[in-house]
Image 1: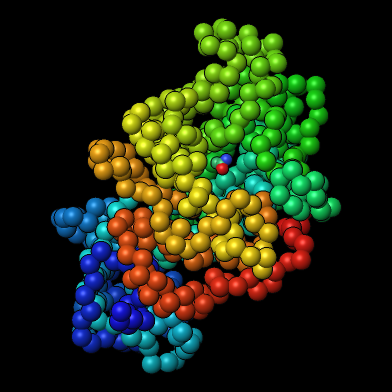
Image 2: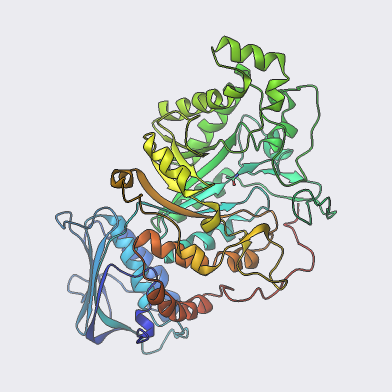
Length: 521
Ligand code: ACM
């Protein structure tokens, strides 16, 4: 196979691309014609070009580099764009502003990735090309777990920007869990004061009994999160927050014992991994508490979707609690186990009344109200079962999208989630296509996302080593559902040079910590 011209090694692969003769030089004389509605895209383009070229790219009505919005363009949807680069000009067009933002990322990838920073230099060349591009799926996401190990907002910005480079459009921010609560809530400051730090962490897999002895933690301010939302929006990325109920809440229970099934009990922020037996109680005060929490979450995050958790909720505490048994009976449920679906229903209802759409982790969706979008994490079969029940679904099958599994077998890989190896080919193989006998299910598929759970992951370098290049594989499949593995492999070689230039440790983890290091408290 011919290796593609390195500068055309685009990831994800555009739907239609033909090389054109010639190159367009961006230099001190270059101006942008920014048509009405294209201002945000022009701002983003300048953000990327200024450090590489030292150029300001001011507006001029007669400029040869044009960014144009044309609502009459058909077939491009919300995110599609057309890009023509020739000797005498560049034309980036889209029907919607987000399409222009996607096109800017393509221009960014077309820039020479080893370009030195030359404020007074000759400029840079874009290769001649004709592209028409449109994504296959509207939900192209990446989960980052900042609950197990905190990362500062400065790093989240870089994470978002690298996602945007690959045309991903959803950052699923996992803000709360047994091991940490990162979301500030004005009405309940103890959530972050108590729930935002823990005494130690496991240094081995769940159940290993091996711990370190380092306290660590961190919480965001409201202003930081609002700033992150704006930074992401400027790149066409939506931040979907997750505040999970009724399980994975031990940090909240440490801060507010009255939310639990044993209000008299004092729990710490969990120092173990795995499925925690402690879950929320089912009194009205618990529902009211989380309605208040979610109101603040919705205030900070304008995303149309809100993730409300729902996974791994053992029902033992409810089965032994007279209050929970009485609640189940009052609600006409079969028994306390059915309180899970009931609880999710109450919380989902609150989200729907606020005009948002609830997303929940689930298997076939039996316990969820129909308005919940199902994030299917166990097997692709569960996604299809949920779609048959009428749910919208997002593929998050752990075997192809959990990037906390090791990238390769072997002792040289850093400590990872045991039980599976998720190599690049497996990430590229994420199942998206509806079973042939049931093509109608395809309409229910919003897309797919990668997950980076951070039980063993404490540093940005480690996050990126696990994320790249597997994210590149996922990003290509959700953009171009059919994929082409040999072609992807060939382009990835060029793309990895781009990742190198951006300082992404996609190949080796440079400073592998002998023991995990944690963000200081
Ligand atoms: C999950 O992995 N518990 C969603």
